[in-house]
Length: 200
Image (cartoon, rainbow, N blue to C red; front, side, top):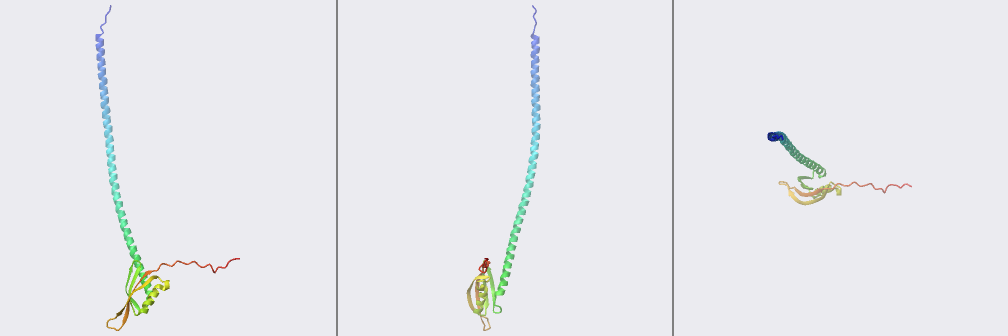
């Protein structure tokens, strides 16, 4: 009977298996290290890109903030200009109203028989202080103001009338105080149809 000694073969096979396992382990370990290194490199590039994008975003935000500040400054300047324009328009309107009022008074005054000492406009009320030769002159002036209800002024009221004597002369004048308001504009009346003839 032939006997074969298999121990050396088994030992060699066992060594081969160990060597193979070690090789697989080392190869796997190397692959893992390569994968980790690749992931680190990719992650580092990703972080660098995000940092660069973040830097660009911060720069853009700073740029837009500067633009917003310039826009806010321009809006403030425009607001100040608008306020100044409104003040100028108000002053222009007040000056025109004053000029129109003086022109109106010049037309309504009783010439060579009276004169104004002061004229004050507050809100819608006009106050006139003046001196006239007599009461009749003041009454004529008030009638001119009212115009029998069709004049430019309404609520014409004589607040006071006093006698005033010129120093050194034997002349007695009348100091008066009159208030009034601007009359509301008259509405245009429609023509009467009574005069129209009917067609047969």
